View 1: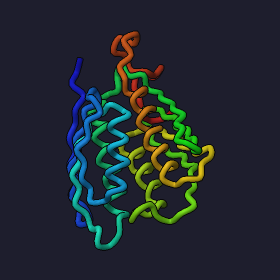
View 2: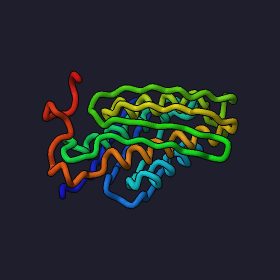
View 3: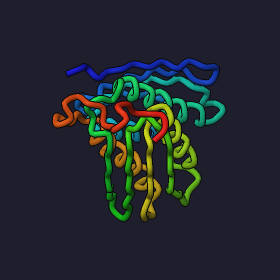
View 4: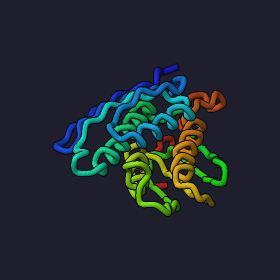
Length: 201
């Protein structure tokens, strides 16, 4: 089986980021973004997807957390896309319902190479720790765009903002784990009647 590992670097005037993923890992995480809550969420992503994730980010945190948050989404998504290659043999679809105490979140995705985000998540607080809650949508948007994934995230109900955010990342992790798994019954074929993933439906 092909080794599904990829490394991506992104260097701009706003951020310098290096990320590495192993789609067939054990969920190991080595993450340092300078944003504590984001590190915690990305560790959850690795743990529950079984994707090994290494990430180092230096950004303009003296301005705010926007650029670093968004660009880590771009880097991780691009690394996932590179590791998937032509996406031959994968299950393609993934779905998860994640409960966290009073919170329930649904995540569905299609590793179609057609990026799209539907985000139906609302927060009642502007910040979690030092992180603006509006930045979670920016991370998921950047990830879905660069990963080439159609991604639907819907918080069905919940009160605790930490639980809501964490259930979104855990839901993505579990759905991603399903979607990128190799389906032996496909015999290495691309999971599309077109023979390729991406472009028009």
